[in-house]
Image 1 (cartoon, rainbow, N blue to C red):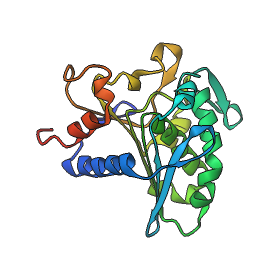
Image 2: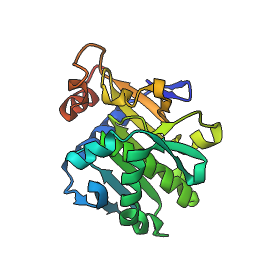
Image 3: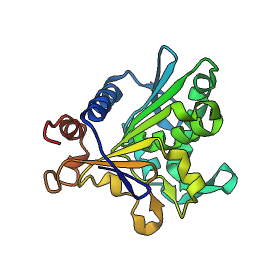
Length: 218
């Protein structure tokens, strides 16, 4: 089920097939390297821009993952994970021109794990800088950790209403940083799989996320 700001929505087989295709693409694209070891890939399909963000693939990524004290964003209007903000700010110049293209009719952002955290920040960037596309932006964060910190107003949370966090049940990474430290997920939460099917680490593996997306008995 989806859980969006406390409200449940049904998930249809077509939604899961779409997500599985985007996730597969996220795993296979030839990523480019930006500053702070951020890995990204951009492609256009007609007037739709697709932005893919890679999972952790080196020591520098893990240093940023673990740098979890919160820092102000947008001049202090909300707070976010310091390491993820650092990586996103380094990546931003590499994707800004593509996002600013006035010919675009939609933007889809897809990220896995570390890349899922960056997708949360990328989604907000598109929402903020392309108000003309707010009804045509969509993001999927697979196995993403928490990024935002503190109590967010409904107006701020609304920025992520078209972002879906996909969590394979028992996935440890999606529960980090711990909620007790003040971190929170945003957007819609889609939980797949069954509790106890995997270890906390195995639930995060890409092949197991894909397996659950493709299950026929959901």
